[in-house]
Amino acid sequence: MKEELILKSYEIAKERYAALGIDTDKVLEQLQDFHLSMHCWQADDVKGFEVQAGALSGGIQSTGDFPGAARNIDELRQDVLKAKSLIPGTHRLNLHEIYGDFQGKVVDRDEVSVEHFQSWIDWGKEHDTKLDFNSTSFSHPKSGNLSLSNPDKGIRDFWIEHSKRCRDIANAMGEAQGDPCIMNLWVHDGCKDVSVNHALYRNLLNQSLDEIFAKEQPMMKDCIEGKVFGIGLESFTVGSHDFYTAYAAKNDKILTIDTGHYHPTESPADKVSAVLPFVKELMLHVSRPVRWDSDHVTIMDDPTQELFFEIVRAGALDRVHYGLDFFDGSINRIGAYVIGSRSAQKCMLRALLEPKELLAQYELAGEGFKVLGVMEEQKAMPWQAVYDMFCLKNNVPVGDAFIAEIDKYVAEVTSKR
Ligand code: RNT
Ligand code: ZN
Image (cartoon, rainbow, N blue to C red; front, side, top):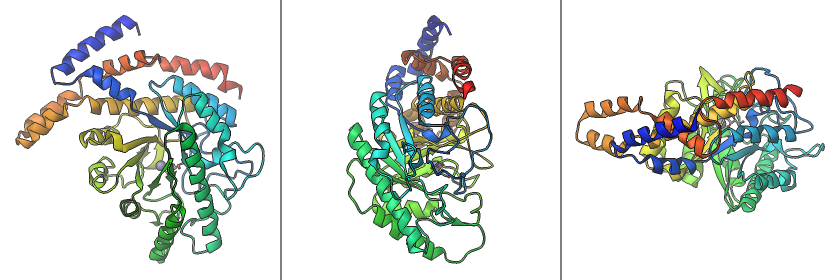
């Protein structure tokens, strides 16, 4: 798109929003300060780099075999940098433990340490990318149906040791980048069929978490993620939303809200103001469930938009961390990153552009039709011109120009894999 047209459109948008009391220049600054934590696992369908890697397990699935997936650490880094070059702003990278730099050696989950992530720490510095982290309970011979809640103490201790080591790694990342590394803990624990020992499993998970979190780690923050069910674990989930919400509130942990982890008619956005009086911070896993927790690429759909509206309306911008969590193996994976990230940003932009004081006043005055009227008009306001300006300022392709860039990358790089 011609620069002149982008600037002209922006000036018009600026005036339209100014009439509603919104300063688009200020919003652009706010958007610059909005950092996504890009998940590394879209690049390779959640395979990771363990020498001894088995099939993906733990009730999650990546479907599709679109050619060109990253096969090793160098390719993954290259793909992530390509994606980042097409997304405006500065963003973090969220690593799972199985993405360590294991140098061709078998390193079991209870043996992992900072050395396996030193090259990531160096890479992060070199590319101005802060790191976040995740322990990995799936795709391992000891994963089974129960990990941290397993009645077998040997298995439980194995995963406790793994999780403790992951916190050490996260803390080292935080120290190196001078900014706390956010570590997510999600375990798949559950039952496929009717089961009775629910209290036992939940008490064990509670105890395991206490043990894992016992050590003070000043440069990392813990977040904990529940869900409804996993494939093959349909009947019962130990770490449900209620379990982790209560645990986070009691133990001052960050609660992770994955948008695919609720019943289909339940609103993840509605959780924001419900839990924020009780938990200090939230981590998001922005995803897109299609009929189940399918982890489709994030788009500007209503549930995602509503989530960002709720964060901004709650005045909680600085209490939320913005992770992405989708993995679609059926389309170009760099395209997936770019579309998902840009869509999340656009949802945030629209939320920042909402005349929320005006809406709040109308609502408190009982002027219901005006609330509805302003909100409906917002849908067609020229926010896209503001986003285009944001891309221009950040020197990344404006509009759908990123598609040609990805085609070029396919021709030059991924098609040769
Ligand atoms: C699974 C959780 C979890 C994973 C990643 C790979 O349902 O959403 O966050 O997607 O850890
Ligand atoms: Zn998730």
